[in-house]
Amino acid sequence: METRKSTARVWLEIDLGVLQDNFRRIARAVAPCQVIGVLKANAYGLGAQPIARALQQAGCRRFSVAELNEGLSLSGIGADVQLLGAVLPDEVEPSVEAGILLPVGDLDTAHRISEAAACLGRQARVHFVVDTGMGRLGVPVAQAAALIREAVRLPSVDWEGIYSHFPVAYHSGSEYTCGQMDAFEALLATLEADGIRFAWRHIANSDAVNNFPRAFRPPYNAVRTGINLHGSFDTEGRRSLSLVPVLSLKTRLAAVRRLKAGSSIGYGCTYRLPREMLVGTVSAGYADGLPLALSNRGTLLVGGVPCPVLGRVSMDYTTLSLETVPDARCGDEVVCLGGQGPAAVSVEDWAQLKGTHSYDIICSFGSRVEHRFIAPR
Image (spheres, one colour):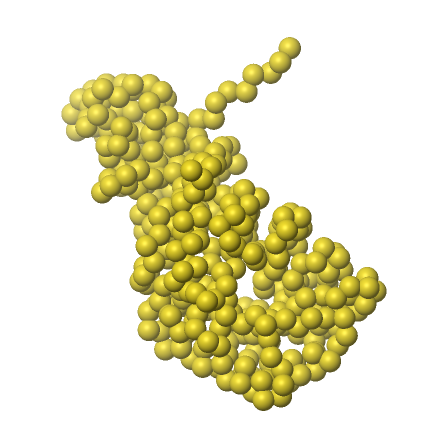
């Protein structure tokens, strides 16, 4: 007997056509720099494979990820895949074998990559990662010239690139960020005087693309962008690019009831109805990615109309006032994120309510949320 699969209660719509449009806008803004699409954490939880294919169709030729398994999952798509940040010792050989571009921030790693490539009879491709002020990974910029001079003598490696990373590029005009570029560019000049040049030179992330045009002008010839591809931004800083959100989070009304004045709503009884009201219960909660911070503060859309959240968001359900949509019925669609016009609920709206950033919101959708990809038109 065939098992019938029920329709998902909560689903995420990801518009791949809008994604491609966002990529093209970014590419035009930073031209002639190349755009490296950042797909770490399964494209921030949205789905690396379909997003990579859509970006390839739009002209993206290189992707970056955070760790080996992410890289291996994309290694057969016919594009360059670059590991950002760090490579662990036991990851070196399988990375070289798979043709993944690797980061080097210390001599030990450089030697491991060279030895693995020689054993495999391959030429590894590597980018030096330089710490100009992130304080997380990479060779400190003051030590970088000496390390690079030594590393580039190692065999079986194509030392094709060099990059660094910004911690506060969302602060437009930041002296700290400008100082990072000063230090990085001084390093490039020092190395060039020694005859050491790199085919790929990149420092800009999504925030820098919006706030620091210098970061995508010579000597830089590539940028890295992830969150902007999704039409989202950091809650601080400028939004110089006209990008459109790619995602909408949707669910349905599980119940519509008229409750009497004084009725308590949800765990903790944090809301009591001031009068008799039409109340709806939505089939989504914090297990699906709705922030607890929406409790008694946020709005969801029913029929395109904002409906206030009543009481505390729970794991599986959220309660709304339906006073502004008296014709609402059980099973009606509810837009949690997305929508059109002034009533639209954005990722940034949720981030501000939660006191976090857009990355946290996008990475927080639960495992039972179905992903539905809308093909380019």
